[in-house]
Length: 97
Length: 97
DNA sequence: GGCCTGTATCGTTAAATTTCGATATAGCGA
DNA sequence: TCGCTATATCGAAATTTAACGATACAGGCC
Image 1 (spheres, protein in one colour):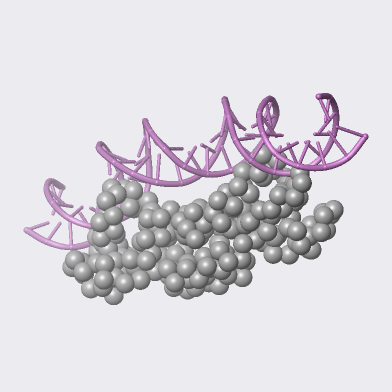
Image 2 (cartoon, helix red, strand yellow):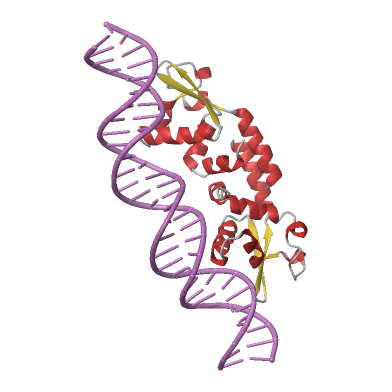
């Protein structure tokens, strides 16, 4: 849990929004073909209007910060929140600030 | 309380460090001539090794985000944490993430 | 093997951020 | 008023970030 990396990751509103979407996949990703408990497919996030490569870069930033985990299934990559890291970050930032 | 502005303000480690220093002025700013309950004098933060103008810019960023308050007394400007905003932010980010 | 889909990476451009020294401004005191 | 101190602001350079389209790579299917 690197607080500095996480704060940098959270400094872009789209990345915060992606994390909030992932809290309620049923609400935001009804269109997904695959079962939502596998995670949310990378391409689903293109709904934000950014290009595929830009979305991919944001997802990579979230992953490097440890805020999401990924799972490859066939040609798809599924994203889930990493609750452990997120909770550890919240605890840490609460104690720091 | 603008979460987006605050997260941007916190994305630079020096600004986070300034906020943590302000939690315990007695521990970090023993050298200050003025009583610490007035706040911490801007120049005190130059201890971080950055130039006066750079420190001033960081402090301005923290103030714009509402994380600190300032009080002018004579030629000096004293900085204090804005606990209301900080706590509101922590609550908000805890609910968002 | 060749083709299609999904995702990552590359190369580039534009914009934002960080930093500095220099300068401006504000307030004190002689 | 002049000089001194504290702080802010300006202007420039360097770095980082964000965005895109193009391309590469990986996996499935024929």
